Image (spheres, rainbow, N blue to C red):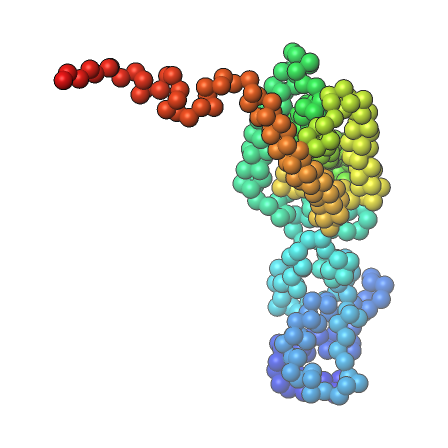
Length: 365
């Protein structure tokens, strides 16, 4: 106690005497098993107020606040008599997700609840990171775009069903692209009908671990799989375009290779979807009330597959341009001799030139 005389005499903190007394002479009672000392929040307040005086003390004398109990752990501790019930404690970390140290020190912040694994997750139906107006705007935009996509792709599919012979290869991949986007749009429309809680919540918490909610897994699987499949069919459309323009493949040859295009498209999307589920990288989004790839894995599970397909598609499109130019030149040479010979003559030698339609003037001598 003598070692802390400097802190008491300096008056750096009004709670210093109470803290030291509770540390060296804790409260004992027959109704409590063990001694009762001051709360850790009080110790941290005193250390923060008297940090200059503590630096002047001997290195062997340390005021260790970790030895004091936490109120968040529901452990009994003392506070000064003049402290209010709403005495502020050190604020919790404002960023989510919270680390184990933050949870042990301060507990879960408002609008969050502790998950079965002991972590702090956003509570279902609460506004942990987004306001109600933000969620409402996201809901409106998501529903409008989903319905627009569903109607436009449905029109394309109905046109194909009315006359399938018009959409042969190399145009056929566009039909599969429309089908994939229609399924994605229908999934979002269904999400708007079910509501955010059914899709993105698992019990009383947001489905941070998306595999804990069957509806979250179903929504993710449909949207992620068919989005990647649509991208793969776009790449297949570029493949068909390249083979037609640069390698002069016929429609029949492309139809014979259609099975390979199907295997690549559906297999590519299925492999990445299985990898995302196996790695447990599925999480719910509080803003939209949907489920998708977590932010930490977005670069690997979204950027890599879609970026690879985009680069492949652009490379094939560029490679097809010389073939298209050659085909255009061949068509121009094929159609040129069929034109009338007079179209090749100079303008003044053509019979229909306005020069020959002028009235004839005869001069008199």
